[in-house]
Image (cartoon, rainbow, N blue to C red; front, side, top):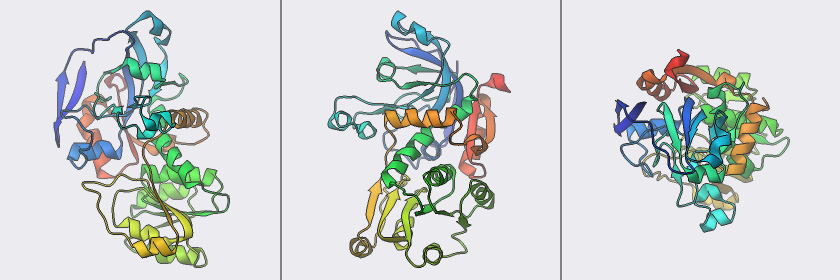
Length: 349
């Protein structure tokens, strides 16, 4: 089978490798679609190294059909169409037992420790099958649309932690795919206004089309001053950082009202060390929260929201490439010119 292996940062190599052999309880998934994430790009460039076992087959946002099973108990899965929860958790640690499976310290992730979906086939280990990591999707749903269940699930997890209320003002720093999904969920929750900071004109247009109240260019406009003016000098109720730039933390602090919430949603590159105005956090009693992945239940909800058309994501898919053009797909995702880049089987082209 065709597989693209990232041997080292910046070195993606196409290989012809055997189709994975299955143990009892495993299933074999024929990849139907892979969508690229910012973390895939950071792994490719070498910026993200935590938890990555080299060489690595990247790709954790994917869908596919089960074409082979490792035992008769899984035979009912053959031919069915699934989105895959990429995090295989232990179900035994304190976090898992407390329902915080997204914080499992023993997690194994497709595209990090396990071969991901930049490949014609993916082996789904029995632990994932038993845990319910295969989320069935309607057959008429485009595969690349179903693959967006993963990023939406992460955003949904962060959205719940922000506890956005009807009429509140939400500031979103970074209007890429994650910022766009946060915009959609904030509006769905009844936010009174959603202000997005995004310098790219094309992305700004997409955000306005999605319903953002204001999209400002942070290279031209003081974000905190704009937010204060837009809220009668009260500040945003919730600020969400959707791009991993440490300097945005203080920008969020100065833009958020006393008693408000700041969600450090994005992963921050390299050491992730930045300076914070601690007195502003202290005296304004700001709640600064982190965000990590999603639970299985949140993934199921995200898949349902997409399958039922309750959250529109089709317009986010701006570029599609064949598996053979995997390098071009990564280059496009890294360029920031599109929103979501999909990689589809060669047979689709």
